[in-house]
Image (tube, rainbow, N blue to C red; front, side, top):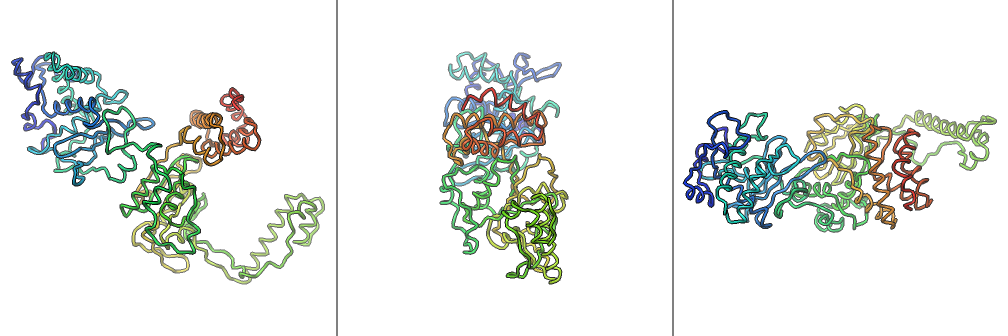
Length: 596
C-alpha cells in the first residue's frame, strides 16, 4: 500500500458523487483544475499548482453536511479534557453498518468498531474494491471545523459552509460550489501528504492491514470513556455521554452485578453498607464492567484527596456483594509489612501484672497515677508527661513479658486475608512508600497463578476473583514514582477528576442532611476557588477539597457561625501559614459573609 494511503492511484480514480459530477458536466470542466483560485492556501507549490476533486473526500463532506442537518444521519463531536481535546468522535453511517470512531490527534491513530446488526467488527483498512477510507476522511474533515484546536483550518471551514449553504439552496450557484469543493479537497490532500512538521498527525501504517488493530471495548463505551462533551453535531447513539441523569444508583447496579460469588459467613460483615440511592461514578461502573466481562482484577485510581476514590472502592465491593479490606501504606512500609507482621504473644487470656490508673486519676493527680505503675512519686509532673511515662512503662512490661516467653505470633496483613477469597482489597496511598521497589513484593500476588511465600513458610496464591484497587494521589508532598513492573500489571489506571461545585454540593447535602441550597452552593464554590488558588500560588503545605467542604458544613451546623467554622474546618487545612490563611479569608470569605 503506498504511503499516501487515501490518495493511492486506484482511489484517485474513484467516481465523484452527484451533484459534483453533474456540475462538472454542465460546466464543461474536469475533476482536475489548474486554476490557482481552486487551490488551497496550504498548497505551497510555486509553479504548476493543481487541485483535484477527490471522490472519497466529497462523499465524506456530503455525509458530514447531512449529519449537521439531520440528527439521525450520524454524529460528530469532541471529548474535551481540562487542557486539550482527548478525542474527536464520530458515528458515521455506511453501507455495511455504522462506523463508531475516535481520532487521537496526539498520536494520529483511529480507534473504533464497525457496528452491524449481528455483531461488532474491527474497522476496515483501506483496500481496493473494499474501502476507500471516506469514514476516516470525514473525521479528519470534522477536526478541521472545530475551533480552538491545532487542526482547525479557517479556510476549510469557510468553504465547507459554502457547500452546506449551496446544499440547502439545491446547488443554485454551481461555480461557487465547485470552487469550494476543489479547495476543501485540496486542503485535505495537502494536510495528509505535507511534511511531518505541517501535516495533520496521522499514523498511515494503521490503514495497511485488512483491519485496524485499535478497537473501542464495549465496557469502555458503556462507561462513557469516549463520550463527546462539546461541539456535537447530530445525535450519538453509541458513544453516549455519562452524565448525572444517566448514572445509575448503587441499588440498580446491585441488580446487575451481585450474587456472582459465595461469601463466607464470617466475612459477610465486611461487605460495606452505603446508602443504596448513592449514584455510582463512571470510574466505578467501568471497573464493574471489566470485572463482569473480562478477567481483569487489578486497578488503580489516582486523584486529589476527597474525589471519592475510597468511596468508589467500597461501592464496588457492596455492588458485587464481596467483603472489603483496606491496607494503608506509609513512608516506612516495607516488603514484610505488605504480607505480615509479628506481634508478641501476650498469652491470650494473660494480663499484665500491674495496676493501670484510670484517665480520671491522671487528670486529678498525675504524680500518684504514675506511682501506681512504676512506684516512683514525681511531685509536680504534668499530666502529659505522666501519661507518656505510663505508656512507656506498660510497653516495657509487655516487651519483657513477651521476651521472657520467647513467643511471637504472625499476623497476616489485610492484603493476604483478601487474597484468600473473592473480595475487594483497597491499597491506599502506595505512592507514599519511600522505596518504590517495595511494591514489587506483591508482583507474584498480582500475577495469575503465581505463588508467594509467607514468613511462616506457607505458600499463597491470589484468589482469581480478588479485586485489587490501589488508590493514591501523585502530586502531594512525599509521593514517589511507581516501579514500572507494578504499573504494567494494572489493567486500568483511572485518573479521578475533581468534583465540580454542583457535585460537591449534592454530595454534601446527602451526607450531612444540610438543606440550605444557596449557602451550600456558596460553600462549594469557595472550596473550589481556594483549591485553584493553592495551585496557582504553588502552596503545597495544605489541602482543600470535598472533605474540607463536608467538615465545614458540619461545623457550621453546630456553630451557626460561617466565619468561625471556615477557620476551623477549611482555612486551617488549606495552608499552615497564618498569613496565607488570612489572605484567603479576605479574598474568598469576608466579602460574602452576609450570605448566611
